[in-house]
Image 1 (cartoon, rainbow, N blue to C red):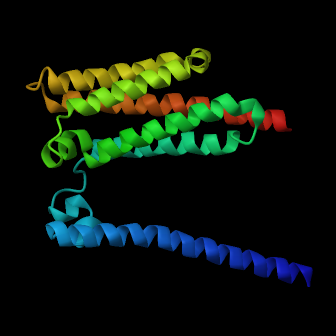
Image 2: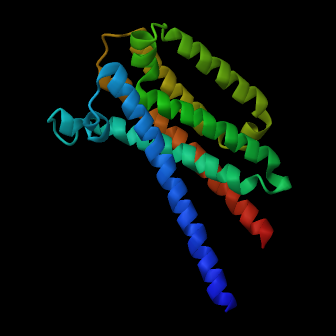
Length: 216
């Protein structure tokens, strides 16, 4: 009898999670779709279909850009997951804050790259110079390094510095040498993203593994 009650309770809990997942997925999509239809008459299928299918272009369109987005997303997920795991352990408090901040920064970089915020949204739609976005990035990066400099010294920070170096080269190519082949700029950016992913994957794995070892 007890097992049946527990099983029923488990099913009810799963149904609640399923409904919540459904609502979290469908409500934002519906609101965005209705807003864009009313304001800009954007067809719903333009929001749901793959860009290459809409434009009748080859499947490999934007291949390396998409790989970069996947790496951004993976980095953010790993950092935020590590934060959730470590935040409950008082011994890992400083690292949990580090992973939370890192995850949020990575989410910002992900959204910027995916939605072309500084390339298109800021200058073309909001009429704000993209240099404002770079100032914001510098302020956030400075805060990050000052706040977590003690932790960074304990990690493989040269990998992180390499990522920032590659991002810098990409920005230089974009703003100072606009005539340079765009593939070179994008290659530097992809190198930066992959190096960023490598750094955070390694440190997250190290800290979570250490917590598991201490818990045994």
